[in-house]
Length: 425
Image (cartoon, rainbow, N blue to C red; front, side, top):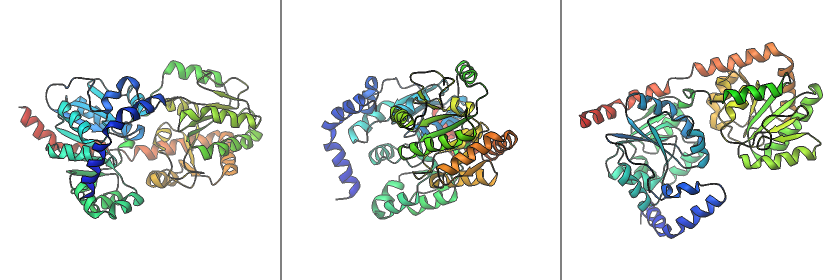
């Protein structure tokens, strides 16, 4: 029996477990308890009249990368549905979706839930971000004749190798994709090898995303509390990096006694643990969830909240991006670079190698190898304001030159939009 058929049967057999699983995840804070029906395919909003474009991004990064396209669709008067799969993505999207766009949680990848979702929304065009490939959802949309495009498409070498071991499955699934608009030639070639037709380069949408928003009053109060103290930020930090960041702070603080480090863990629930680690080292540490701004004596301020990197990147001038020192893969540095921050990163940035390569070459970012190296870089940059400002300008300039993907993607899908207009007429 074909593997895709087995997957479909297994997903159907697991239907009785869906509600208990969602209830458990809701109790853990991983699902919105008021919107669990959406994960089962039940819509909580009416479908608008006319033709509808559906955009899907799995989590925060993928969802936010779709914003430039969403804004273009809304500006053209196209009805727009945006789906994602995590509560953090929904919270991040909420303040940034333009009027005229609507958000729903994506259904779990079981045939019944997918069919229920599609029965209600009846999208005329579907755009999935990066490599979001749910077989049952893709198959259901394909069977209805809904054109499907992968945008901002990327697939790691490791993932492509895993798919290549199942050529029949990969060929059938990737063959259901009508258009694959990849971030770069390497990704385009991997998609072609897996059977995706019409795979070509359109660029990286994340370069087109506006800088993260901030509440200006909160920012002013935050900066007032910081005063003239030197500020360093460590963003999207993963667990094994937490002690390294604290070590780097302690070392840098020897040269900069007033240093305050803003530590934003990738998972805000880690905030309490970081607080414990800091206090074990004798550091004065505070949580954003209990204090709106660092006190004058705090050296470590843990940003254990969602959607506030816009504030962090504006308050700091030097930013270290996590999952690059003790972890691997890296996190996207576009947002701090766009805001003119000097970017520091570890050696493990494979998932964003092209972006870091551009930033490093422009001298808007620099690599550090360990906690002492990070401490040295932080202390140097914060002690050399002119060098720091130049590095920030270099970072912003490098990012500004790499935009334009949203325009390329809109041009590529114009034939589909034209067809929608003809059918609507």
